[in-house]
Length: 516
Image 1 (cartoon, rainbow, N blue to C red):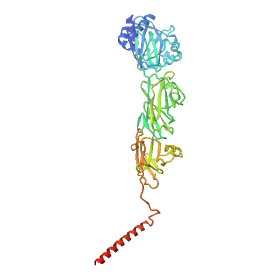
Image 2 (cartoon, one colour; image 1 turned 60 degrees about the vertical axis):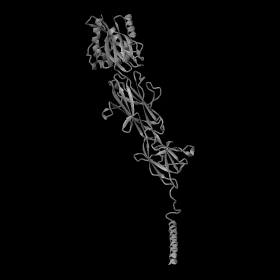
Image 3 (tube, rainbow, N blue to C red; image 1 turned 90 degrees about the vertical axis):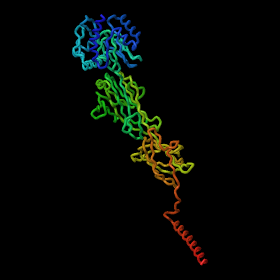
Image 4 (cartoon, rainbow, N blue to C red; image 1 turned 135 degrees about the vertical axis):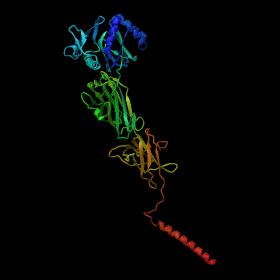
């Protein structure tokens, strides 16, 4: 009998190897212990073998699935059971729960035949494309006709061991999990180990930083921040939802969302629709405990087309707004994928940060340094554009100094004047090179030359003092005429000089006369 079961196992393994998503091995009792004792635990295997002999000698085998994902549910549906064999001929009967699926005109009738007595035989071949097609239809039928209370075998929630185990009848089975179809058709004859190829989807997020993509960037308030999310999908995908959450300093542009298949190219752009995807508001979905900024919900019809490691790329943008954190942790944007039958299983979150900085200026004269009020400056970015900002704090209101926030508001100004502290600060600037120009110097002082300032990617300023301020020194000018133009001063000076010359001349002449 043992040899008969081995032969049956070998024949049926040929069918199972057609499945895209599993590796399957039929094993004897001893082979199972020898090859997988270290993986599953030798005592665990032996206990399983003993249990099988107790409940149904010669009619059940151990079915292990290896590579499970903790927390995911795994379900085993029995399509047909092995009823008898004589060494060369095998007889299978359909599970009554599946009779309707194989009835004339039903979806399963194109693949297998069930006669009046319930005997099951295949009509089609077992090539990969056919088995995948059959599996998808069978899986849809199983989900519509089974509940957790009427499963053929116990539904298993994977723990941290990395495997799950059933004592399954010999026959054809469909295995499913929250990640989708894991196997086509299988038989436990006598025992099998299915090593899952199905993997959970993954997601990575980047933000545009100049011409590159990375985990962080810098921006000025009002700038558009561009994001790219890359989803690595898997075959058997179920209910994929992309969740994206932006912090308060980012304003999402709902019209900016685009989805691409494989790479960002016009020819790969996927049009939104009932059969592809939709963009939804931030109301909780799937495993959310709080509202997100938005969701991209992928239709199951689209998920059914996905193959292993297929890339789905989602691009979108936001504007850095006036609630942005200056320096510090920056503005976060987090993304994750949820999936599974109820979209409750989630990937690890992937996050980007957008930073914005400030430019503090201190105007002084002398040593020790004395603050100078009344100096007016403008600031230009590296493209020569004047920085516009609106005042948010003022020394006159009790603040340490005047503070301006970059803005396109109608009340925004392009010139910033030092107060009694000699200081002002402009906030909301990206990293880059800026030019500080003194437009008006305090009365009695010379204007300084233009100062080039570099704000680094971490917000530090190359020429700042220990307190972070860019120091600008003013020096006193020359004494000016009391009236406009040259005035009479020059005539007084020249006249005085001529008088001195005349006196010297007369004295010299007198000395020469007396000597003569």
